[in-house]
Image 1 (spheres, rainbow, N blue to C red):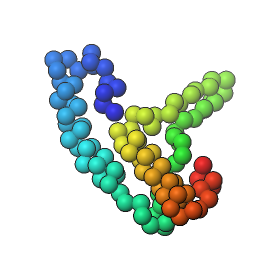
Image 2 (cartoon, rainbow, N blue to C red; image 1 turned 180 degrees about the horizontal axis):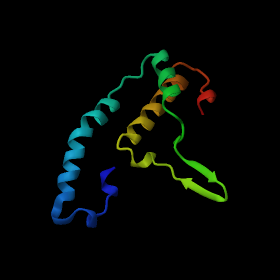
Image 3 (tube, helix red, strand yellow; image 1 turned 180 degrees about the vertical axis):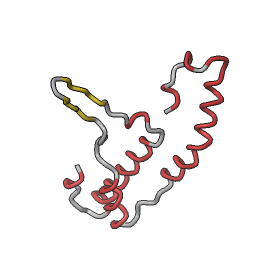
Image 4 (tube, rainbow, N blue to C red; image 1 turned 60 degrees about the horizontal axis):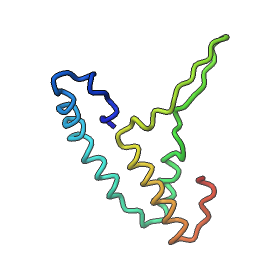
Length: 106
């Protein structure tokens, strides 16, 4: 999500050039993820296992008396929304069309 970068970090309009460059590279990947067909139970199960239900990167680290918190950085991933929606489509397919219990993935 390039829009999270502040205007002041790119002087003289270079932010728009940076945004266009990143979007030009990532748009095809985002569209490909959006077009993944979830019409096979084996593929839906595989997607639900591979894509985590919550961001796996948030951590609390304690070194001696110091404690550090690493926040979830998934929202900065430019394809995060597409991956989460793909997992949701796989879960809906398994529950609605296959009639399977999806509680193991929640």
